[in-house]
Image (cartoon, rainbow over all chains, first blue to last red; front, side, top):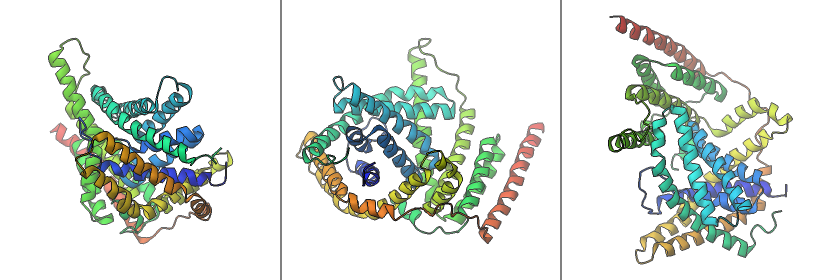
Length: 171
Length: 262
């Protein structure tokens, strides 16, 4: 690992948490309450584009842990981890191996869909109530909207980061 | 995020982090095993008393109810509504699982208590102390190649970094984003483009502090294996109250049994 690699991971985790605070000022109409834009996903996409897979997972893991400890409570951790890690893995696969099929916006939408599905499946398993799965269509529609918006911002962010060569020194 | 402030200050009642964790674990197990209304009621009362003693902030209960509602109650309610609509409009075409609102209520109440106990523990215990307990418990993993100490140190350091940078972020970036969305003349695409510029600017600026952050991180190690359980007066009171509660909890099961016989 390069000198300063730990710092990059820490900074990206902090950025993901801080950027997600911007959701409170972005007036995006959502079909149901409680659906979040998922701006933290921008950092996951940036990490996927520039860092190794294990670093991406570590960033998501630490972010979920810190957010669970600081805001939602540790019991929310299984949801955050299931959604975060699974969506990061699926986005990584799409970004690295299905590049001809998916743009950054497409990767982001796939990530949002995976995230929502994973969280709902975990809630269904914990509560042992399959009736919750009827909520899935609403979450999928929301994921299309939120994933597209996050993807739009991520695309622009990646373009700017590449132009400025910010990660050029990271092997 | 305003709740971070509470986490980073000293708790109202100081207790040993390990012992408090053990009490929380016993309570969570008891919550998962509760099976009737009396037990749930005794749980609710005990948790209310603990909350007042540890935090003296009833808003904490409201915030937890809201978070829990968003994660469990809302998806369940909407799922239930959609399943009823599906049964109503497409009878026989859609499989709807058997629904028992009473059983689900009990499950949700138990789950909420477990959720709440975890939340209360983490909100009333300084994270460095939790990290020391976890480091002590998980340190054997270090020897098999899982760098638990390093990752716990990263989490601990991230919490510190967030505390340092949140005020500046709210004053600069969030204020700029707020102004961006105040302007009603621009299209949503333009605004999202401007938001992307803002986000990129923030990321670029923060990554420029990489070397400084690395140096600070290397100097901020969790004291490895330093956790030693120290039992204070508060710990004795907590253990004593837990024993009384568990006695009441077991009695509640008998009261329910008595009522069912009568």
